[in-house]
Image (cartoon, rainbow, N blue to C red; front, side, top):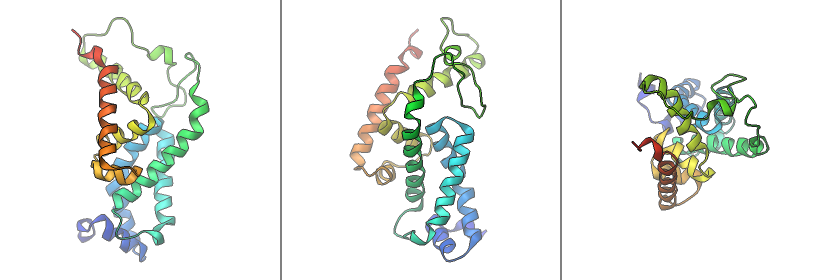
Length: 198
């Protein structure tokens, strides 16, 4: 129980010094937030799981280089962000997929075609029936954000990081990060404006 009370930084230093249990505590503490960030970034459950394993593998490989002066959350999200940037670069050429080609995501190999998931003219009045459609619209709106705005939005909204932490992760001043968030929110409001229309 005493291990769970220690800060991330103390746990990482203990792991660096050979205490394997400290690493286990860090994994339990951060895997969910990291996975959610990765999943929203790559939108493929199996790929996000692979990337999460890679994040923790890199933590293990880099443990001797970890500086206690660095906040662990900032350090580990920087690793995750770098993986997302690499993944995005590799995926650029795959973004011109046919509208009727099966889509990947939600962990399944073949999902519905993009045309099948476009909003219909009539929206079901039952909230439960509309929820998946609304989630899909929001996910697509987030997808349309420029990379720098999307990563700030996801780190803030999905992972709950502070603007200061995000700034350290992306290498930008805190005010720049806040501006990116503001632009992201403005674009999302515009993209989803019809939800507010009568």
